Image 1: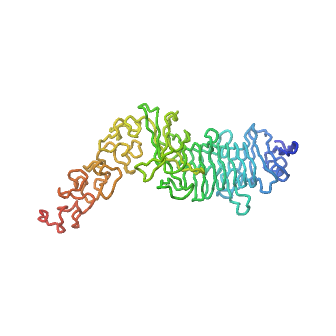
Image 2: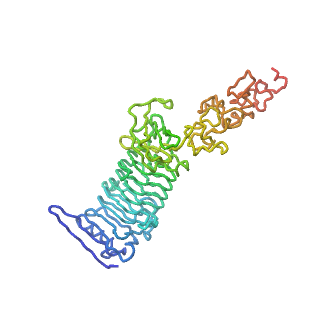
Image 3: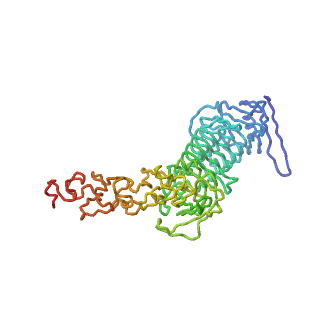
Length: 557
């Protein structure tokens, strides 16, 4: 290794002072001249901006193993610092030997940036299992094309957290609020916890690969505002946020966490939700969208449907409706997420930006007029396995993903794909019959999530059995032709003895028409003791006659 080489180039143009170029030539971590630690200290001590480059070492990589202290761009640094890794070989900052001072965010960072306007580029920041690869506490810094948690050759070397953007020191130093920082083009992968933690305002996260981290892809802390995840153009701005062990993006906190814009990204196949507002799982849409919380808990689209225009299913017309927001983005959902029934997991392919129709429409599902939107067949040039949608306010606040729907051939137009309707012999509906069991309810109403599987735990009735609970009364009559059960008048199509009195619903409703007809001697399947004589119908010797003593002769009345 070169013991010492230091160069400072001062290039002056008329009326303009240029940055000073400085070079690292010694890859030990000590206070000898030419080490990164000393070059960085000299650059901060001397006035003006500085660029720090690396002379290539004799080995296969330029590797600096930190021994006792993290690297720091201090608050009193005179001028900005740009550190640019070598273009010829991987420049690795290895934190294996740093002391473990705690596992909380921002406690132990490989590189701490306390001042403003600095740039870190083309570095591999690895092996800080106690803390984060890089922590940004100053303003308007840029992290570009770095590898956080992995090396250039693809080998994994995780940190606990990837990148932290924090305003933790703002109470002590007003100018250290962590605002305005930009993360672009980085690979943030294989870290033990979350890839990016943002607990500051006005951050931009664009064109990064944020995958296979042990926590969330991106965690946005309570109170943060004006965060942009992605950008205006999918091709150039999208982040890939996938295969993380929790959610893709968490927006934590209450109503103070606002204007978090998550736009034109590829988010899919995370173990949790694609986007989770409030860090509390799926948020149910509310009427008029009056609830409060992160991003105002903006309602996602209420309805999303795809109508095949041909049996071959190569042409679809998409229609939807939404109570909230001002614009939409349509995405293709991944087959993996659909197979796992992770309907709120996000979209991996961007299809198009969509505006609402100019006129509000009154639909029977809603008490007030609602926005509708469409995607024309020509706009679905490549048909994905499924579709989902994001809603946005004018300020950019983003909703959670709407429930994804599958898209494909549907010969009977019942909303369940042919590939999922495998036939009665396979305990499924028939692809060529919209009401397989002939009970009067369309298959798509009984199979609520339209996945071709009868799931009683979700309140679904059978698409292939007209009488789901086998009590003698078919589903249509138990529910009085309305799939939304009214417990005051409807028996339960999934419980053969709704009132649990020892008599099946079919035994009480003798003619199986769903009506309690006392004049026919029927007992009430919704009341355990029809005659109120203190004996349950199932054990009453004459359950439709008041007979508290259970005398046999009394039943003749």
